[in-house]
Length: 235
Image (cartoon, one colour):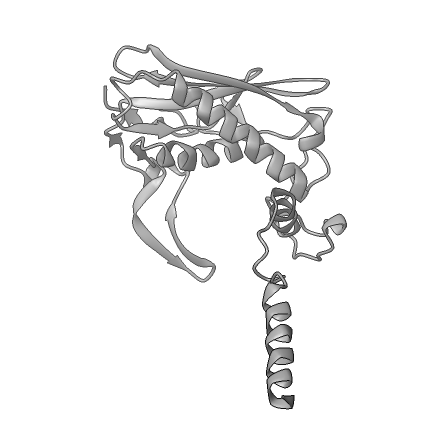
């Protein structure tokens, strides 16, 4: 009888133990995933409870996640209104230009362009990276294959569509207008637009100057002048 009672107690304890939910296997909510991601995006973003090393292109984590949502929304909008007949032709992603000077961009324009290489690719669009040199450059600082020096790039690339856009700033933030253009007939094939509020653009390492001073990166703009030349696109 004692043996049977002991066995029954052991079975009861085992049942209680197995009925307890595992803390490690509990599914993470979107909030916890966002918190985990955000904690490793920004240097010193204390509200996530992590100390992270400084990064040149870092920004506060929650703002980076919100900006990512905006970019994904832009990509979805462009994908919905694209020309289905030309969606399988190669496309090159270019920098977003400042409306005040179409030969200038900034870190936001560069970041959105880089993100769209991924967004277009995962939507099964053939993306050509025209910044690829075709060679591996081995240096003490690392091994590199990209360049913004026109002398190191191919003069002709098989691009039939381009992704581009403009940015215009007001007192509340930046208006982003994106488009894909057919290089054979110059027709706009798809478009998207969004508003990026100032709260997503300030407070990080790469904050945009609200006074609009010193925030632009000069690109080569002259076809055959001292500043360089444009890459010739195949029409």
